[in-house]
Structure formats: C-alpha cells, structure tokens
Length: 172
Figure 1 (spheres, rainbow, N blue to C red):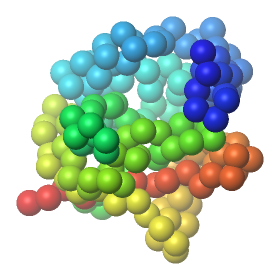
Figure 2 (cartoon, rainbow, N blue to C red; figure 1 turned 60 degrees about the horizontal axis):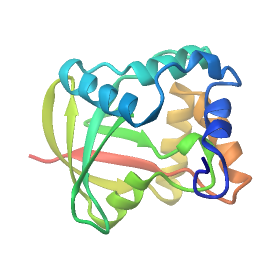
Figure 3 (cartoon, helix red, strand yellow; figure 1 turned 45 degrees about the vertical axis):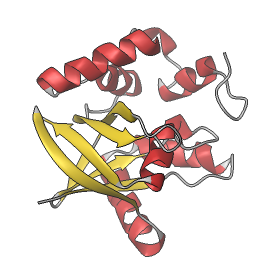
Figure 4 (spheres, rainbow, N blue to C red; figure 1 turned 135 degrees about the vertical axis):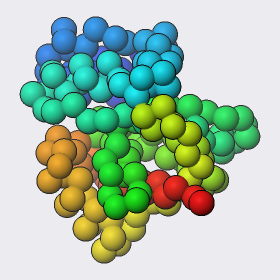
C-alpha cells in the first residue's frame, strides 16, 4: 500500500519506529479508532506510547482533535501528541517526515474552528499554522522537548517540505 508521494506505509512505519517495526503492534484503521476511543475515555494513547518506546523517547500526552473536513464539511477526528505552550496546545504535522502534510493540517488550513478533547475535557479552539519567526521559535521549543521532531524535519526537507507547527488556542 502506497502513501501519498509514493512512500509505502511500511517505509513510513519503519522510519517512525526507528527501524524497529516489530515494536509497532497497533496498526491500521481499527487500531487508530481504538486509540482515539482510548484517548477520549482516558486521555492516554497506546499508539503514542508504542512509537515513543520504539524510538527510546518519553511518552507525549495526546489529545483528540475534531476538525471540519476541507472538502466534505464532515467532522474528522484524530489523536495527536501535543505540547503545552502557555495557554495554547502545539501539535506537529510531521506525518513521520513524509512527502505531504497530514490531512488534518489541510482541514485546519481551510477552517480554523476545531474542538479538542484533552484529559477527558472538551475544549473549543481555533487553529493556526505558525509561520516565519514564530514558527522558528516554536520549532526550536518543540525540538527541545521532543528531539525526534528534528529527525522528522530532516526527512521532510528531502521532499521539499517544512513540517507545520499548529497552534491550537482555546476559545472563551
């Protein structure tokens, strides 16, 4: 099975797991759906945990993001590791350093309104993609706290892509 840009899903998993794909037990649509259910109920992600363990990294807390589909207008949900930055949440559109941005980034570019579920709390938010100096500053902060993101950016640069840093700001 090929991912956008000609990269196979197996290649993406091998890279994201630091070439230890045997450590990635949860895979596929059913696993993603189960993980999203788990994040909703507990605030914990087994998917994030397995990739962190494979890479020798610390677990990063995970939120559930609901965005409006750019073409369909339907609600789309995904579980994403996040970092806190003041009142905001930062999520990284790494797509394992692949050739394209994740679909959820395109959805947020088309419609900034979104909903978060963080630690079993629902939050209405607005999203924006950090650009220019802000992106550089936030990217440095993200890499300081999650060093594997630098590895993803290096890989994405080979495809001519800059990994988006998405700022999710809670609304009153």
